[in-house]
Image 1 (cartoon, rainbow, N blue to C red):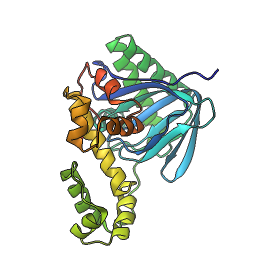
Image 2: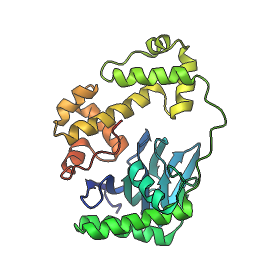
Image 3: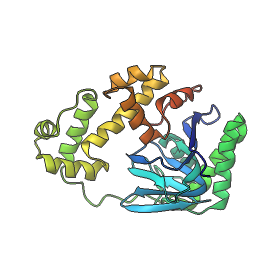
Image 4: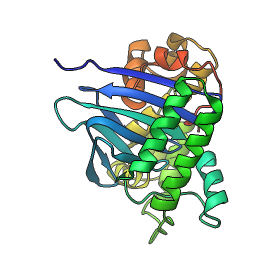
Length: 281
């Protein structure tokens, strides 16, 4: 009999700036999305498949997953039984602080490989993750920092310089500003294109090249990030849905889970310790 899906999202006072997720998924599929911080985890069983940086990756039991900030990716089962994993979502500030101590001059850490094998690093991540469940702040903070250091030393590299600025960069910047300002009442594609003096199809191509997402999917990501802020403040899910521009609470629930892996109510219950959501922008 196939094990049922289950997911728990939480924060720990011992790991400020880090969100945690422990989950088993079978049919759940993460939509294309990006985090403002890192997504670092270890596969406990099964296989996860995900699209990232133009390729499809498979992460099996014992593998480490390393996703950089603002990099669009997906996530779904790579075999019928699904997959189970423990994920940590450290902010850029957390990882930069570790890198500054261990790798002077590297700047913001960059992981060129999305799936790696490092048994010692995987064991440290599992132990740090488990320590937060037991409320052992000293152990969790020590193990997590050690794990991040191991991954940075062995798997981080200098971020490659962009060969040239993307076409339509100015129009995309303006379009993003408009979407941030008009979260609740966004323009149509034609209105957005006219506002930034671009043709609709040209804007879609440039926007996707710059952000990894078309404008409507980018807007959904913005809404979910804003929803996290409001949920953390104690706002009810029904009110959050209205304030971020979703049609109703069911609409919020659907998109929130596709990005966060848990519904808004589960996320909000995890907010006992307010260390600051990673995806505020």
